[in-house]
Structure formats: structure tokens, C-alpha cells
Image 1 (cartoon, rainbow, N blue to C red):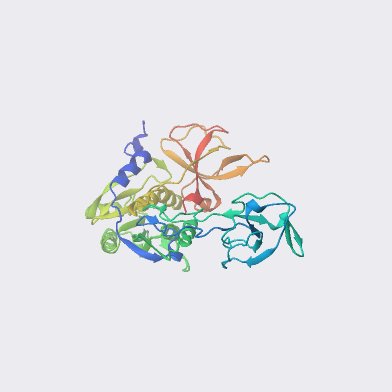
Image 2: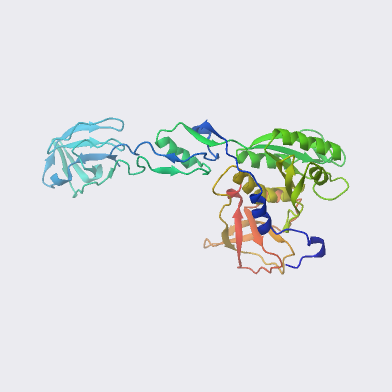
Length: 408
């Protein structure tokens, strides 16, 4: 790739990410947590089922438990018992049926359930109106999960539905990887915290809240290092403290080369940078390296750049460190509803919305203002569309689309 002179040292993300992941340690420590708070955590061990689910054959609907072989449209079957969910019935007498409700165990001797809609109710019993087959409307024991079955392997990130599966086999606690301790610091003398009045030249600190939320959604333990003034010694001191308390350090701002940008120099004095400046837009001034042996990520100060570099690089890195087996969500291919004459030298990640026409066909609409300082566009957008370097886009061209719903 022939880059613009100013961009010759930029690293393509396709090269940067594998190199970054190869340099990261894996978290091996585990802890047991109650199932109700395990969503989003990474499994530390494999999980085998200790019981069958369901543990007994049961009725799939309200109706009548029968012996299928006894079916006759002419016969009247007396009702010998009533079995509700949570109750256990007696053996089914020959020539009889049992009134049964959804989820109730099938009584011994029965092998099918007739829907209540398919019977005629009479004073002396019921008449079955349609033929019955063995196993009809019956959930077999172990139909969902069998004893000894492998449910999940180590490294799986637990979703809400996974907790239901684990609960169904009787687990109340589960072994997961220890939460990563992530030190979060924000640099910039121009920043003020919401709730305080702005002085001339100040803006409110939005990146802190975005990054704190993104880290929390990854179940990280966020260590708040506060806002750091634009001063080399102050920056260096906070980085040393962060390395003592955390597994990972995430900063935003100060990684460029201006006179007031001190993060890069401070990091290099305490360890070093393995990666600096990416061939992406937005997010070029991204940095990663080590501070006193701890992993460091330096994100740009512009809100869109900070968000994009986090979801594309920091998120998969933190998941990797926790041992998860799935680092990246699946991209979608969606037609563009816009045109670009020719993209620049860097791979572009455009904020887009998904629009549907009257026939339900989806296309991507690009926000006109793609400035990295327009943070509100992240809330208005549905995700990111990828445009490779030096590429023209025509309406209808299929682009890779990454929904925010998969990232946050």
C-alpha cells in the first residue's frame, strides 16, 4: 500500500490486531460466583450436566395421558386420576386415562398424551376423537439435556440464556475467570466533570463515561484514576500507580505528539510502545505497549476515535486476556445507500444507520458529518460500515457492517 508521506508509518489494523493479541497474557485465575450475577463472565472450566433435563417424561400440553395401543373412537375411557405439574401420579390402570397438565410427569404405563381439544367429554369419561401414537405430546426424559453431556467449554462468555441452561441442571454457582482490573485515566486540562460549571476554554469529560460503561459491560473491575493534568511528571506518576493496582491501563488523550501530549513519552519511560498510530479513520493516534510490565492502551481524545479504537482493538484484547473463545462478532454484508468517489489512504469506519424501503430491503445510510469530534453521531448510528483504503463506493455495493448491538 502506498501511503501518504504523513501516514507511511501507520500500521494497518489487519496487522496490528494479531500482533497485539500475541503479546497479551491470558488470565488463569478463577472464582466461583452466584449464577444470578454470572452474565457476561468468562467460564473457567468445562460444565457437564449432572442430571437429565427433563428428569422424567412429562406432558407437553394439557390433555389426557393414555396407552396409545388402546385407542378406539368407539370406546369411552374413565378418568382414573388427575396429575398437575409438580405431582407424581399412580400407574395408569388398563382401559383408563389420566387427566394431565403441561409439565406433569407421565404416569407409569402411559405413553402418549391426547390434547384436550381432541376428546369428547362425557359424564362417564372421555371419548378420543383422533388416532394416538406412542410418544405423542410427550417430552422424553433427557430430551433437552442428558446426564454427562458437555454443556459449555472453558472460555465461553455467558449469555442470559446460558444461565437458564446452567440453572436447569441445578447449578447455583459457577467457576469463571477473575475479573480484569482495568485502570481508567483521562488526560486534558480542558476537561471538566459533569455537574461542575465550565470555565472558559473547558469542555465536559464525555470519554470517561463512555469508556467506563464499555469496560463495565465486559465485566471489568474499573479502577478510577481520575483526570490527569497535561504534565509529564503528573502523567508518569499516575501511570506508575495504575500499574501497581491494575492488570490493564486504559487512557484517553495525550498520545499524539503535541507539546501538551505527555502520555507517549511517559509510557516509553516506564516500558515502551509496541504499537503507535494505525492506518484507520477515525482512530489513527492509538497506542499500546507496556507500563511497568502491565498492558497499556492509549486511546485518542476525540470521542468517536476513542470509541472506535476501543471496540475494534481494546475490546477483543480484554476478551482474549480473559480466555474467551469468541473475540469478534460477525460482520454483516449490507448494501450501501450512499456513494463515495474514493476513500483515503486509511481504512475508514463510517457511522451509518440501517434504513429499510417499503419492501423491507435494508441499506446503509451514512452520516454527513463524519468528524471524530461528533460524539452524538455514535448514539444516532446503528453501527460502523467499513470502507477499505482507496476504494470507491457505489450505491448498492455491499459493505461490511458491524452493529453496535454486537459491541456494547
